[in-house]
Image 1 (tube, rainbow, N blue to C red):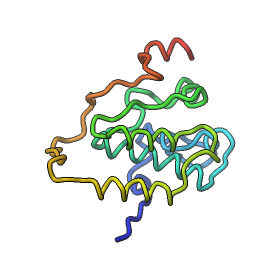
Image 2: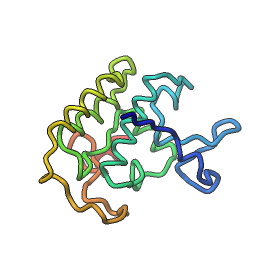
Image 3: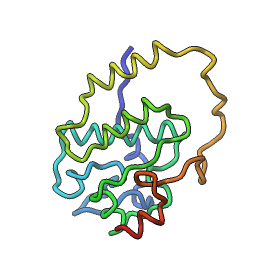
Image 4: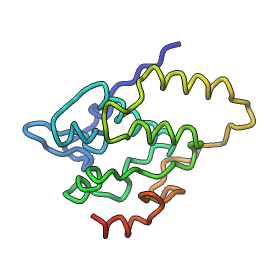
Length: 162
């Protein structure tokens, strides 16, 4: 069994989506981009790992857009540069959230390899028992059951730090 991931987000009308920002002559999905891609234009397997961590966050938050409530503006870029990380999504266990955080390590070379990520998820799948399945038929939520913070501080505290 092989899982393949691609950017279906580019199949939507990015001209009207505030998550995509014009850089040069292209609209880029900045909320999914690694800091080195945003600030240096560097795109590598390491920046793909960062984006994969964002994808995991979306999956385990049932489709909530990343960095909910934060507009893509100078403040957003400051947050990313300062190392801000989204909080643990409601449906992610501690191990999955640790994987997300490792994908968001600011130093690209310290992010996990996809081979490691495959091993982590194979282990997770091997440990599944049917009692852990939840009814997640609810749709994406505008107000998710979690709060954004940086190292336990509130979003307002984070804003005042920037």
